[in-house]
Image (cartoon, rainbow, N blue to C red):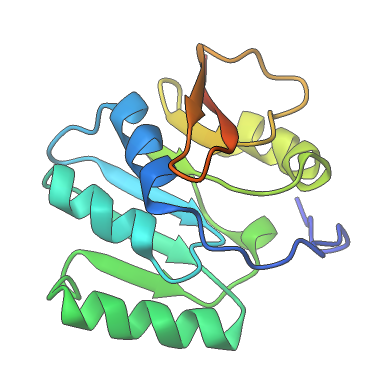
Length: 161
């Protein structure tokens, strides 16, 4: 299905490291899994995922400044063999072999992605997002965390059934 008609005007905000840590903890990464991050930004979530388990990662990003930052950080972390960045539209991403999917989009974009996730993700795939839930999906876990700056953040964990 072609989803490219769906706009994505979400701004680029790197996810705070402490939020990334909580998302990855909820996902309980296992060695050998494939982790996808749609809208991976500077690849911090993928780099941290590689530090937690022996996983392979694929990030999708279209913003030139984020792609540049991601490539630099991946090279610095010496993870070029485990993390690949694809400069493709998230709606065109092939997520059919994802064990884990990391997301951070507005609720409207998550809603637009919802059908794609339902149709293309394999059964058992886990999804973590924060701040916004995925419309039409029932979270397996919902966790509120207090960031160091005092902001309250909600993290959602889903499992494709």
